[in-house]
Image (tube, rainbow, N blue to C red):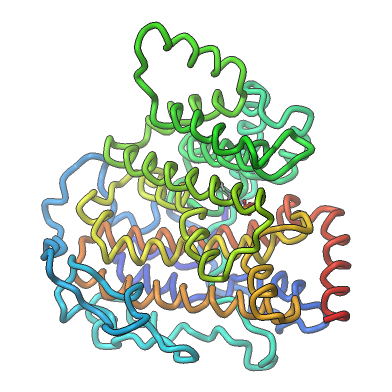
Length: 475
Ligand SMILES: CC(C)=CCC/C(C)=C(\C)COP(=O)(O)OP(=O)(O)O
């Protein structure tokens, strides 16, 4: 049976957003504590006290059919080319908002080290996100040495829907020929459940399947081109393969003489085939602009996967800031920015590409994928490139300290996202507020999946936990 884990305030997207953002109680913090053997934070209060089983169409008041104009929306002011808001001075360039916001609405400066983000409560009240600033009960008061993730739990859990999507996904993967001989494992990883958890705004299995196909094609390319040598992955050839793959994601238009070779490539390469099929399915639910932004995000993803391949070849452990720049784009943004397409509304390109919105989206995208760095350590090889590993190399600290620092960085990004999303919501359309809310929900669903999926919790996990303990005891 489907369960909504937060109230569904269908008539007021603002209230819905605030309840969503304010409620951390569904978050599976106990699973995070596994990363800190012997130092688990207390179990969260069950979210079920707030369970409302009921109507579909989360926050539907803010939703519009795909492709309609936002006639009644409050447009974000046009970017003034010369407008630079935010902090100035050395080391602050990354924190500036360039254009797109009235200076009055600009979030305060990014926090200094050790400082927490402050949000404008009056503003939050005005945009209907009153509880948002009060939601930061994110450091476990009982275990001060054990940081708590500032990340919600899942909004909806509908195991039957997840299973339906998973079954269809695995069948499709078999047809495409991806994950040959691995379909049982693929089924157990339960990417259908990931889709059900991350897109609570729709119950339509076909929409979820469309999103699932491209996600699994992305993962397959990561596994088979870059990560898993046992599957033929090779950093030396990864960039060349990603280059060809992008010609499928953003279909190339070749001279007649050469076009058949692309068809042949589609016959030969299961991942290319999977992308072609997945993109066709996705196109059922995207406007031209939504598809274009997805292709753009994929181009960025492939570029950073090439960057990753180059680090593997040179055996370089990136500096922490290099890694963060890399991971901001080698992130979950491709699936995350589909939240409106899959839910059946459209955030306009003007708002999507507004620099302030882009900044907020980049922050939440990085935070979401850092969660992967926390949970996926169990399956990664010894020469893994991840934030904890980069921190260990740079700061000469223990694995435990590096994990704690990673959580802190994640939390800072999430807090900044919340603060800036609130400010932007004040000036933006209802669709923008909904988009931020849906991204937040995506993070909650993703967290749940990472905490439980067999992809990161197989027998191999024990081997790595042993490795973790060893690293701690020898540090
Ligand atoms: C879903 C998606 C955007 C996939 C492409 C890249 C990718 C697999 C990630 C961003 C996830 O990170 P990572 O490569 O570390 O994933 P695994 O831990 O190997 O599952």
